[in-house]
Length: 209
Image 1 (tube, rainbow, N blue to C red):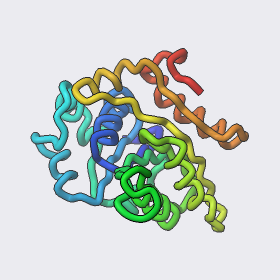
Image 2: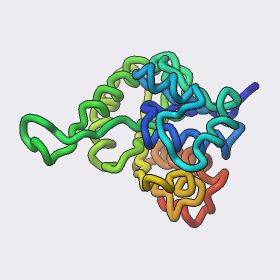
Image 3: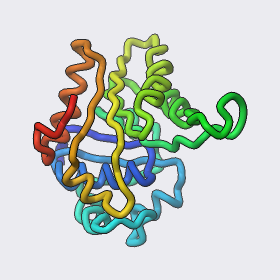
Image 4: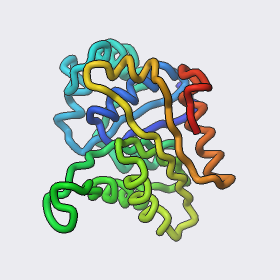
């Protein structure tokens, strides 16, 4: 089947897995792949015993899995193939150094940005999906803009508002979807691509730019 877009999510945790399942469920015209370096977690997403319990999640995963929703440990190959990359990795609190116990540790975001930079063979839209949008987007952007190869990365911010126990309902009927972008021609064009994805099921007035 020919898909209109290849969407990738790096990070198969509490945010990435359900969010991508909902996008695949609502947008059969897109191929959605979730990657993670943890093979046990990926095996669980591919099984009848998902690593996360949320009411309604198993049903939408079962319907979309292997149709247009895929779970894989092949990070580099999927970076190459994707048009839009959501990043949803851990943001633990620092355990050493300045800000110990208080400041967010952005090492996983920075590591992911470096991996995207090394693997990408064409320009990509990067969607930062976290509860700390400004910090994580800046951390990734600093690395991605160091690229000298002519490949361009547009970094968008798309903060997360999921609540445990109601995640599927929150994704299907969000009060709002916030999207932050650079106010440049390329930045606004990238933003429009993400808006187009959400408009498959979210009323336009709830998408806040």
